[in-house]
Length: 314
Image (cartoon, one colour):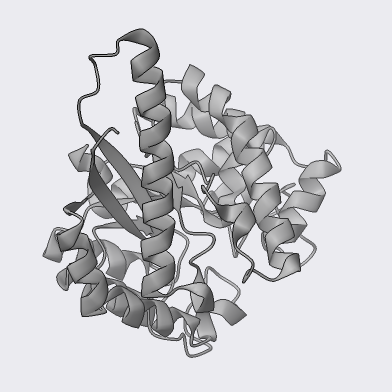
């Protein structure tokens, strides 16, 4: 059996959403519980987040947002297909509905993504080390092509493809949420070829749907990783033996664990232009923070020889 060495990227999403999110993510980074962050440049505390990343040398990428709050591109702040009647993005499900109806202009999607990369560079002083999509919008039909073009044009090498091994057998995920996750998985499977053609890379294994919010626990993270690594190693081993029975050496497996730690947002502070959402105000953010900082999880990483790193280290 192939023995896999594991490099784990623990990405704290929604950096910049509010000061309490920033505080929680920084605490996790300093405790060795998060190794990488994803910045919402239209978040109310994005400039503060960028300063914190500089101060503490936190590896940072862009969490491209087309679904929550306000655009950063000035030309799109009025009369844009990306906006609802109230002048904000259409929302997680609203964006998908409008896209399915063919009402989104991909030229405007590209304009906004480009503006977000430019603002990221302005805030941090560099191009994102990686770029993914808030609420997984980057793997949606049509959007995936524009997203890939933007990454290629800016030379951004890494993204996220949310296909989680073992997702189908996670009985604790409630049916409406599982339906959404299965939609994300299908969109991601359809995106692989597009991103590959543009020379974009991502971690070998993605985990983060089955372990989100209240569903996060030390045992859930451990079993998700163990299951995924064994499945990946078995697949790799069988491919190797087909081509060369002697070629059964160990290799490094990269995993991205998507997390959302922080302290609950207190309205009206926070959000991306229209105030904070329910998830950000719930105790689920704090639950993730406490789970990630649990010494039991840290010792699991040590016993499994799991090395935390960031996309820029790959």
